Length: 308
Image (cartoon, rainbow, N blue to C red; front, side, top):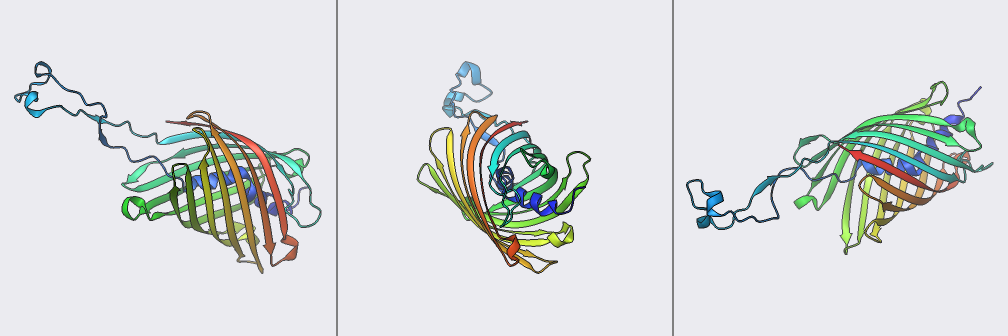
């Protein structure tokens, strides 16, 4: 019979997995500009025989034909597959065990336009996590959530404020029995600054309040992060990411401080397919010594997406 001991193992593994880190980044990503009326880049001169309507077009000079830009897609359906090596699947200081891990994620997202300058995101995800040797730790995850973001300053140059809500549950793969669930209310700020033509530096702060079941996992996060993205080639981008996070547990006497360093290279094959390799290292220091740990991960993934 499976025991409740599995709960912290699964949850912490989710936090440090590469696939969920990318999903978290997606909450605050920049979306396409608002669709509107634009001027065609092709200037067309209309002859008098073609363009007279009471006024000779020759008197007006060359005409600019106004074209309605296609509206950006509202929906996105994506599938992500990632295989990685995890150096410490139990997330413990002692008795460390390593294993290979396969993460499969399906996601349906919508970005409805509510107000000018206000970006909205609504999403549903289903994740399957399978280990090579430690199959008793396999789990499935379902999540649903939404977020709102708004730039501020001239042309959004000062940064972006965002807020969101996410509900997530973990369950056993066979009978779908619930293992763990949490509700994440978050508020944050981020700013990106181009450095030259190929580099972008981004930094931000995020606060999360996470009521959980079992309640001993109810906690508050305060995190700061910084990343550097470099466009190596036309379709190849590298990113170095660092996060410092304080975790305060509200129902038990525990406080953690963790560091995460993450390096990834993404090759965008086309608008539907992107491949990546990544490596990460995490270090957690806890007021409860048994929860201290270090973990390293590395692997590769493939993402497919269709917008409509």
